[in-house]
Image 1 (tube, rainbow, N blue to C red):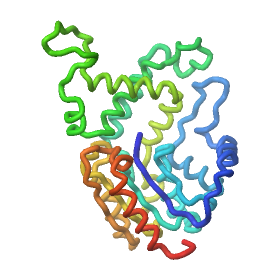
Image 2 (image 1 turned 45 degrees about the horizontal axis):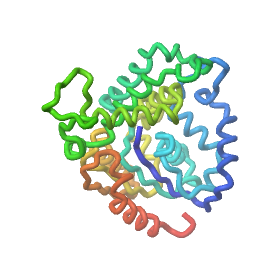
Image 3 (image 1 turned 135 degrees about the vertical axis):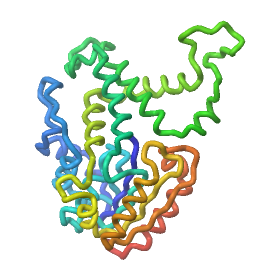
Image 4 (image 1 turned 60 degrees about the horizontal axis):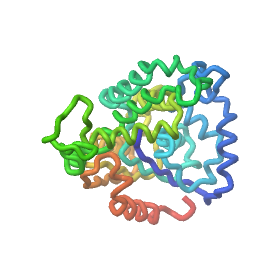
Length: 299
């Protein structure tokens, strides 16, 4: 659940708007955001809903709208151009993202959703009145563990953990079925960490929305949809990213060029996989700064 997009908008950032934006989002009357007393009444939203929400929020007050926050921000920002809203977006910088979810990306998400569905404490989504500690934490933790694998590369896992056993054990000790490797302890940590700060139903709904993501849906295909983007672009890929492989960013770049939009492509050289854009800031920050600096004043 970790792609990135920055969008350059036309006005200044006002931190005091944060509470107002949250309030407007909560009352935006979008189907996926409407929750009744029963959690199972959640309705699946799609990226188009996020785009519609962005049209109701004063995005002109923002300098940056960052996809890392909700994993869907590339849709309202690119969508602002597709829907004829150039006043809302001056330039785009898609980082480690895609125009539509691939079969493998959907497969990763499906494993996580099944882990949650198979947790009896999920209760079909109606777990909010469960006693403390009796929610679907095992399912959510397992889903996060699967996702965590996709955020890094094989080289990073090998260099950091190798085949070391956890808890001070060695291969010369008496081993049992549940003796953990260090990499298992790492995954357990990230699974348990998410449980303490994220709602399981929200994880399901947002993850499914990402799988449904398709820029070309309802717009006569990818080529026609991307041809409507007028904002200049800096597209970034990561050479070790297994979650969003670089062919997906190259596709964005090539579709923009084919539609006559100015676009540059930059590939981050890093062993860290998808999370490289959060780690190798020395390869991300300067190109973004140069990209923004060359934009016309007031853009």
